[in-house]
Length: 99
Image (tube, one colour):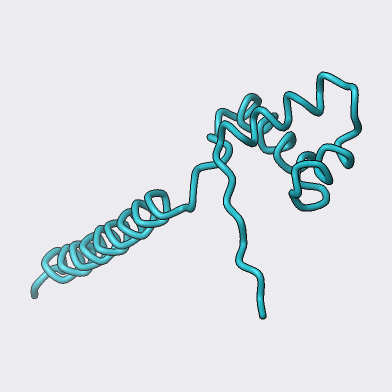
């Protein structure tokens, strides 16, 4: 039977990374104690650093709001491009010199 993927809150991830950075135990020991996957702390730390450097929000959640917004923006962009192409063709047709 397949195991379901566990989701951790942003606060849990930040606290875990902070715990690993303060020392005392290695990241691997903390992962074993907390029952989280191997390498998770390093991945979370990298995401937090990326957030600080690039201004991108780390741990955006399950991705739904961002994915919905992205899909809507792509759809709107496609419609605008189509309208632009139609206007270009119309301009080309009406700007031809009649003899």
